[in-house]
Image 1 (cartoon, rainbow, N blue to C red):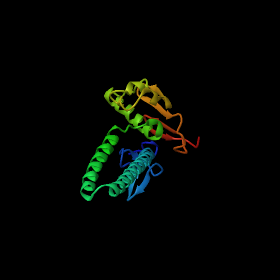
Image 2: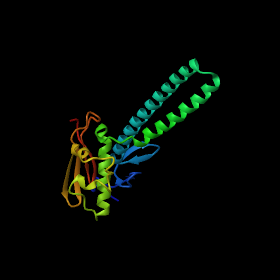
Image 3: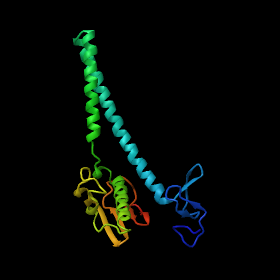
Length: 200
């Protein structure tokens, strides 16, 4: 079996994620004897960055809620009798619970705040489109809105920060035009996978 990246070399490994055969130069060991291709390794790193960022945001919100609850409890202790305190605290906690739940439900993904993560979302949407259209990729990113990108979350203006070109009916390039300093490399998504350039 030949390497998917270097057809002139024999494959000794395979990517645990995409199952493509890899030669020694293309296989990246990620620990525990597991190997991945560069494309899948980089995608995993981007997803981990985004996950950590979301965890920080969630943690900060929880701390703010806990701080507010403690502040209100102290105020109640100064003014009302113990029985009223118990009732008031129960009501406040109930209100805060519904408030936090409501905020989490309506919180929207903002592509402009994390262009690297949104680039992965767009790449996956293009691939899903191609699967449903006999391998043919969309002519414009706007064709993804609706079925492949939710209109209630993604607006047409969110797509303007990406350079997309259909190089043939079944191939394409997708490149973020402004990474806002998120990553020290330039990224280009294609039908063959992810291409990583040098520092911009």
